[in-house]
Image 1 (cartoon, rainbow, N blue to C red):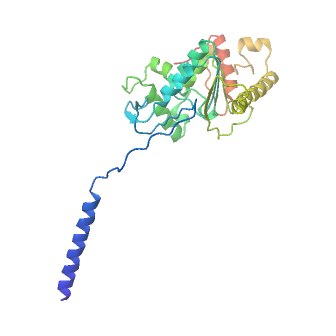
Image 2 (image 1 turned 30 degrees about the vertical axis):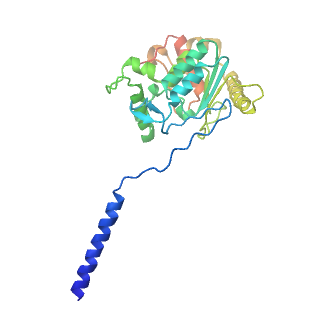
Image 3 (image 1 turned 90 degrees about the horizontal axis):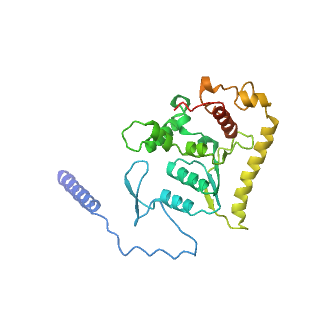
Amino acid sequence: MGWLNRNLMGGLGALALALLTASCSQQGQLLGQTPAEPPLPPGINVAFNHRDGARYRSPLTGQWRNGDNLEQLVIEAVETARSEILVAVQELALPEIASALVRAQERGVRVQVILENTYSTPWSDLHRADLAPHGRHRLEQLEALADRNHDGVLSAEERHNGDAVAILTRAGVPLIDDTEDGSKGSGLMHHKVVVIDRAPGDHRQRQLHQLGDAWRCRSHQHARQREPSAPDRKSGSGGGVCGGIRPDVGGWPRRSPGQPLRAWQRQRRCADGAGGRHPD
């Protein structure tokens, strides 16, 4: 009897497992219909980088994904600007958006950009040996984004056209980061804000504008305190704005760790004026 019970229980267990497995292998079905999107107030548009009903090609991988093309939406918005574009983002890595901002400035639009200091150095100036694992991974992603023909080798043209921060810097687009007040930066600037042709009286846009003005004011005060003599400005020697860099020896100065963005920008402009050339 014990033998019979054991076999009976084993058979029932196998039958139960088979039934469960069969039920789990059934394909799921969606019941009902997708609800219609609710109406939006006038002047409000909503986009999602993950949603059904729209597809876009990833600029990084080249693969098609479900969602709205946020990069193209930003570019189209920038192209509509008539007077002003204020940008406050943690990181700006897409060169096509940077190029759109440059074109806006060239047609007379006032463009100002604020970045977090961690991401305000052109990636083409970075060296893998100086980076933490996360920074090396980010550099690999940015290089892959710049590799337009996906051959695994970056040409000089791809480096030139693929570095978003360098594109802004070369064009003279006003760019500061969260070290502009003389601090080491908060490390907490996680903004994703673009204000185009701000409306008078909008307090959120006014606060963003005042934030940039405050940083610029403090930067100018520090710059006047450290202003070198005329011979230093011309030659770039000693403690002048060139920081002792001789362009004929060192090329363009690279940004040192912890160096404020504005100070590094002054070094590059000084090196340009003294005949410096970017090593790339």
